[in-house]
Amino acid sequence: MKCVAISNKGLEQFNIILKDWIPKNASIALACEDSYIHYSPSVEHMHLTIGDKIHPDSVAARVMQTRMKTDLVIDCSIFGQPYFVMGYPIYLDQKEAALIIIFPSSYTPEKKETYKFLTGKQEDMWTPVPVEEITHIESLQKRTWFYANNEQFKTNFTLKELESKLPEFFIRIHRSYILNIYFIKNITKDITTNFIIQLKNGIELPVSQSYINDLRRVLEF
Figure (cartoon, rainbow, N blue to C red):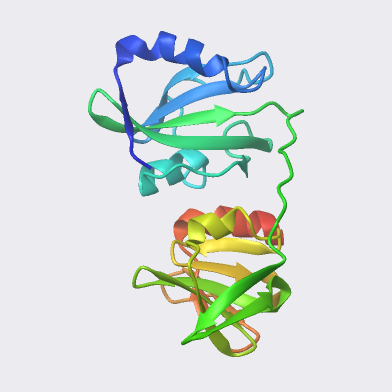
């Protein structure tokens, strides 16, 4: 996603515009470098102070690191309680920043219809594969591949497109990988304390720092 440049003078007008489309009682925060620099609270969210440090597992930290919009995810780091949060990369006075939308506790995301199967290509043959049989999906050399029953298939979807359309038992663990949690054998740490997931078929996949919090939340460890 392309970042948007916003001057500090326009922050108040920016808040007014956002309030027209975000849910009632949502809060708006702006983060720059390692701390929050602006906060427009709702009556429900009163416990963030300008100057508070960004938690390394927060949506703000992910946006600052990846410079990409996040999907709607649960973030417990801002207020110590779980809230749905969405983040956008922006620029403030030519500095990289993050726009954070914090949704009220009453907010319930609209449920999306998920894919029941993916059609994969092998040479000149196309095969519909039930998503329950897919172990993981990989982005490699600007192409997307998925794996099922010890076979490799090519798909035209990107990981970003698939991430929002797959059932909840699929989770993004890396910029290059989405996996089916039912095929996880175990989770360990390597010598650099990074998490490594071993699948039941013996394949090992790395977990990037940006997705550790999501993995812990889904698997509750």
